[in-house]
Length: 430
Image (cartoon, rainbow, N blue to C red):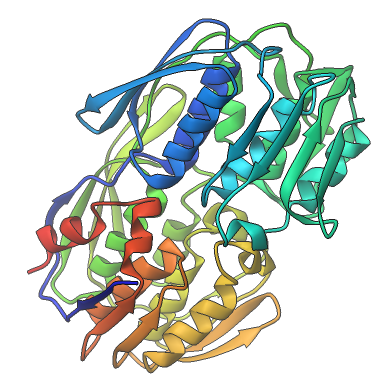
């Protein structure tokens, strides 16, 4: 693994465009493979996780071509059709989104057989919350030890269900919505709290019979999905690291361009504003069903806050940054209802507590979150990314705002979602 040192920097100034949205890129490739016809996806994220999804689309029978575009890859996908997935062994790499969403499409192909597996970290990521409702729909699904990959699927005729997610999860919800396209009757998915709605927006754009009902999100069977013509916005989860760096480093004034600002994704902004951060929208537009905007962030003093379970789904990937912001805030910052973080690329709750604690932050590990005792800053030191791209980026941002700098062990993990992360940070650091 590679070490990288991030030293305290002067004000972050200028403009930065984050890479294309990872969540939306995954979904665009999957729905393009399911569609009948030729889909055009511009600005597709060129990173390890999303390349795994393009490879999966090819393995399942879609024709995929790609070329360099202005804001990522320009991808053309000739779909296999909703009922046309070929039998395959799928290597999902490190892509948990692919692992959990794709089975919904495959499960509804009677007689087909697929195995999904990936790298070492994927082998530790539970899939029972996908497998169990698919079995209720009639799918034949097996996983190791009852809940871990590899995930083996044998297609069957599916039946519609009414299902309430025990934990809000956009990935599980998306999986079941895809299965509902191939099931007899109307499938209804209810959530305890709203999670990101990229799949619903994209399915509607592809002509799927999907709607909101009193019971939840309802979807019915169809014979085809229409091809997509989609431009991927900038990834808010990637932009969030530069956003928090600018909020923490004195004198900073940074504009983030072309960022996806879907309300189900920007819980971090709402929490940071509550803490006193200066964050302003510069411009906003609607592109291919997703709101896109520019964001201006300036350094400001922060006060502590509490993040509760109803807020977690809209900021699940950004919660580690609340731990960092809490270190600079006045008072105690508490995050609860975030047990889902124990099932990411690492046990992200434990990793955040250990990582920030090693940098001099007074932070406590709770069963479903953490408590940070703010001290106005942090010392610095050494942080192990544990193969987790979000932890690697957290350590880098901590270094920029620290007193002594931070060495990130395993910085190469950023390539999972943001290959140009180090160069982009350097371009705006004073």
